[in-house]
Length: 87
Image (cartoon, rainbow, N blue to C red; front, side):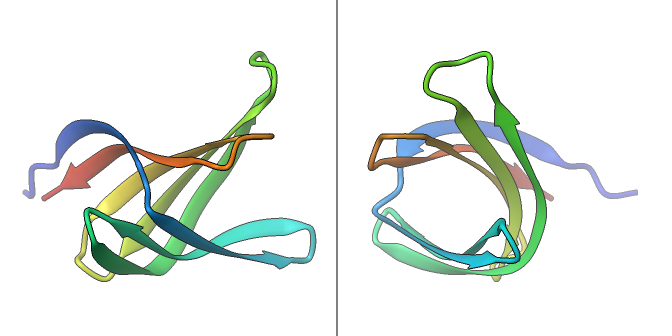
């Protein structure tokens, strides 16, 4: 059985490419620590409306095999890498 380890990162991303499709946001790729990752699967997207402005959260799989949790707060130009889930 594979053990998954969670690492809290909480760092800004240098670049995030998203696509709007049928009123949904999909993350296409991102750049963190000068390394570009291609998103292989978008798992989930949620909105925390208890915060003002609302915070959007995403979990995605990237080409390295890792699962990343990303966050974007409406009205701010900064995306953040919140967590990495490693096998």
